[in-house]
Image (cartoon, rainbow, N blue to C red):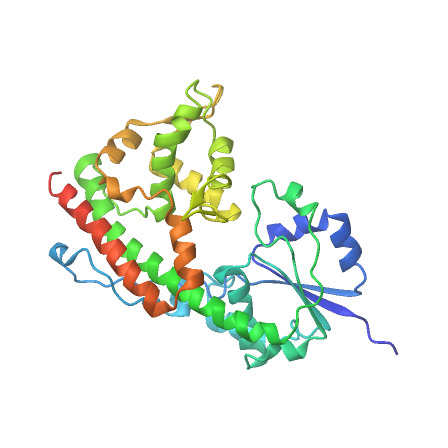
Length: 350
């Protein structure tokens, strides 16, 4: 009896599968297979950072090696219990297909997390030999949150040469190590200095998380979008589109900037969190659906000017993609200690 041809589709988020299936060329490709399996790579290795306890305010700013919560503490897997998830994965035949196609962003979260899952399942980093063909989406990141418009141009690459996988794995491992080191230490200091502002000046009683791209978005709204939409038409959609096109015409060190502020999936999350904290408010029935609050203006006044680095995503991409971890660590340590050192001095006047 003829064996049915099968393929495994690796995506980060469940919502993306339906978006890809709207694409005629993609459907034509995928429906050649009689068995189609889908795997969502993001939740499994999305370990939460574990920050040090017992430090005193005088110890900050500081940089530290990254620590993670145990996988079964992270509460990020789809079962909320990593041991159950791992057993279920290893005792299934879900990854055993003829071919595999990656429909993920080309970054640490997307492809690298998928590789980690494949390594776990097959018990080796040489998992690529288990598949006849390995495909990649040519649209590995979206320049706009309107996925359907971009996916209309989506094609799949010719099968990836298997000897490319090992080099790519090493590259993404280094890339991810640098990115997570930066994020960990940015958050480590931000949690102290930003929450001190929120509690002393605005009577917040609980700690909140204000990320690097939330801070950058606040500054960009204040410095650029307020002028662009001075007629009161600032909207959630305006901000999301801007985050995906901020550097389209910009140059950094004389070269075009091929990055965004976060990813299309995170654009909406950034705006949602700004609303949740109270920096902006939704106002139905107005020309624009967002209004800047007094908290927005007063909080920005309390930030040191060094907190505004318009080219932070470009700078971080350069470090991640061109430097070794040890080289990048030197630059990151100097950058963060300087930035938060000045913020600490600003906070002394609260």
